[in-house]
Image (tube, rainbow, N blue to C red; front, side):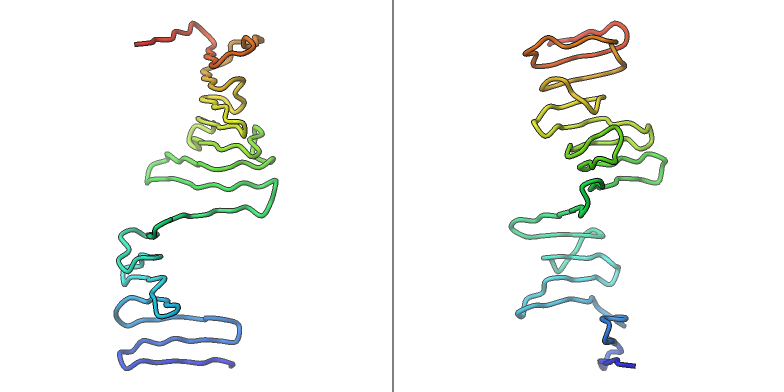
Length: 171
């Protein structure tokens, strides 16, 4: 069967097969992975995973002097996204779009309201920010409906676009 089984007196077992780890069971206590004598990863008895911490407080807890989480797509047409959803129909996505994400948000950072099926915020590669539009025309472009076939004045810092009357309040 090409398997090595290690059993402890406390009833914990570790099964290793030629194809990799088949199963890890622990009768009591957390499971941890150590390298060079230092704990690197811990799975608590309640299922929280800690990377760089022995006391994970959330389902995934990363701790360190430079704690980062990297999501990387291996495709130029795909996308990299994080999803946020609670127990209501409300769901949000944030990520970097690929060419298959409509409207084209390739290489743009975006916030997508999945419940309303629309982009709420897009940041272009050059730093232009669109609120309510995936294609900002200037450094800041706020859109609520289309103003029609109009073009922003050259050199504008911001564009505010609305289908009907639009007001800008500066306090």
